[in-house]
Length: 85
Image 1 (cartoon, rainbow, N blue to C red):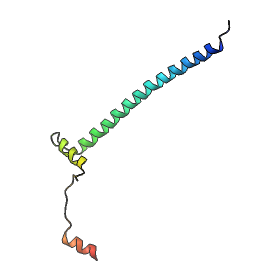
Image 2: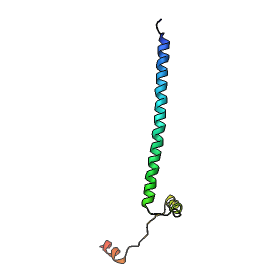
Image 3: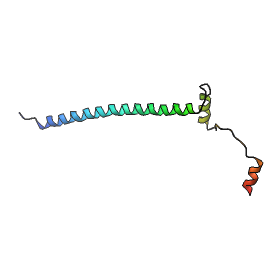
């Protein structure tokens, strides 16, 4: 007996659903890998800043508040005079 048209369509639907499920699992895996890679990059950046673990929360709070992290060095009087010329 030949397979009916609706049975063929249903088989195709099942194949597509299986592919979608596989792709969703792959997407979830890739998103997790991406998050791990970002976290590694963040850790590398923070370690490169030579900030102690105790200082880190304060530094992050200051960054969030928009404060500068470097030292503010005023221009010398000679520099201002040169700029005016």
